[in-house]
Image 1 (cartoon, one colour):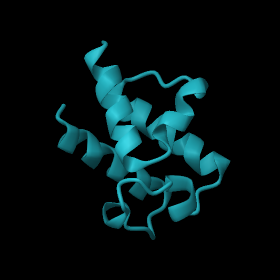
Image 2: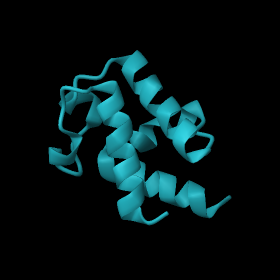
Image 3: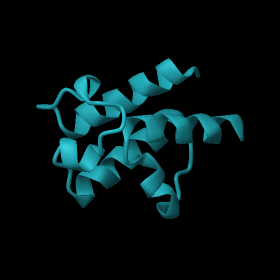
Length: 83
């Protein structure tokens, strides 16, 4: 997948978790939990949605690598390449 496609996957996952939000309007470096008011369960559901859609294992130690939109896309891109 391209970075743009991964970004769309991340945005779709965020919309599932926070349907009232507009993740596409977020600044790329904004902290997702702060900007979208995600609690820990919301964030876990976000990670699970990414795993389900992409089949990429995301260990808990790597959760901080998903804190911003750009970070999430970069992380998923690197994990996808390593498969």
